[in-house]
Amino acid sequence: MEDVEIARSTKLEKISKIAEKIGIKDEELEPYGRYKAKINLKIKERLKDKQDGKLVLVTAINPTPLGEGKTTMAIGLADGLHKIGKNAVLALREPSLGPVFGIKGGAAGGGHSQIAPMEDINLHFTGDIHAITSANNLLSAMIDNHIYFGNELGFDRVTWKRCLDLNDRQLRKVETGLSEEKNIVPRMDGFDISVASEIMAIFCLATDVNDLKRRIGNIIVGYTKENEPITARDLKADGALTVLLKDAINPNLVQTLEHTPAIVHGGPFANIAHGCNSIIATKLALKLGDYVITEAGFGADLGAEKFLDIKCRKADIKPDAVVCVATIKALKYHGGMPKEEIKNENIEALERGFENLLKHVDNLKNKYGLNVIVAINRYTHDTEKEIKFLRKKLQEYDIDLSLVESWEKGGEGAIDLAEKIVELAKKESKLNYAYDLNESIKEKINNVATKIYGATGVKYSREAEEKIEEIEKLGFGKLPVCIAKTQYSLSDDQKNLECLEPFEINVKDIILKSGAEFIVAITGKIMTMPGLPRVPAAEKIDLDEDGNIVGIF
Image (tube, rainbow, N blue to C red; front, side, top):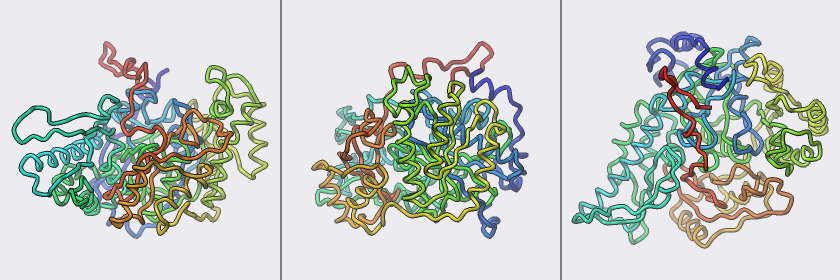
């Protein structure tokens, strides 16, 4: 049975009842139909003195192209906590249409561990990403309109890109202004995918609507001939962009198939942005639940690193426990086993791939100082011999293991993990960052590369060197770094799965995100506008004769 069929066959509770479970009052809820709603941020004032719940971060090893079920695991864990009588709330990202129609599919979980209404969440939802796209492109329009009417601010180069929430490689580099109308100045431009845009990053890092407007005003959109920055505030664009986002900034409330409350808000990619849901949603969830389950995108080297070094630092929060998700097939894949053979038992490949898991666990436990458990998303083709081997290897490093079957069994399949998380979260937890903000940009990048990725060092292109110097001269050198890197490897080469040989990280470009308040380092062959695969998921998505959506997974 397809995920969409499982979701459709489940009877959902009205969203008002879900809100009632976690103490949201009727006047604090703004329904979008029967099964989804926005939460008015006025609720923050009422809850400001309430004690925060426990924060549980779900991350993963470096994934295979279809992912390892991290969202499914997070949803299953929240349902499992409810099964054992705990008040749990999910805090997840919103899916991007890029993966939905591309290779990875939706991001609402799978099987019997899904958030619902699944089709709505994976498609237009409450319109947040559309609002972000519109705000981004309004800023682009205002830049070119300003230049058309005389360029009073003196734009010499424009650094702001347009965006679209779809995978479309043809838009990576485009020439605009070719109508040959008087005063229109043609220029090279390009598109990012919306979830990699600075507006999305700002949206997820802002603490309230006033902070949102402040950050939008601080966006640097271009430079004069004298290399002086020009901001969105200089264009008088910050007010209009904030208006476009005034409803989107309110978090979305939905439910799991087992009626566990889920706050779903914001959706930056972790390989090209910071990969975490909004600070607003996470902090609100901490006031509403005794346990908050959140996730960070892709592998722990990307999503978890940015969650800890960027989001936790900004929000002044830290996880009480971390779940590192793995699959036996992915471990064998990282052990050099061909994709078409990874369903077969192979202890040798599993042992080689174990090094990838061990690196992530070591980072989380020993570099960051956190409480960690490994959760195996179990498949029917996993053998008892492979599971026994993995459990024994983890015991050598004093790491507990939980076998999770939430895809097949929902919360019932995650009870063991839920019980272990309750105990793990009781232990004292500290958070050590990978770098100090007072270090230079290069020192911060080097610390992430060597400590977290295991690289021997970092090489910079001439363009990256020049931009680092420029950013530090402008006074932005103390911002955190957000490294854009492939999710498939600890290195910046997606084909280097085992990382057996020493490797360096190659930084080809540096981008200042002055509104988001971080510096992006572009490494390897990473693109901020992905392309579709040879056979995109879009080819299988359709309406059946009854008007139901089919093919979303």
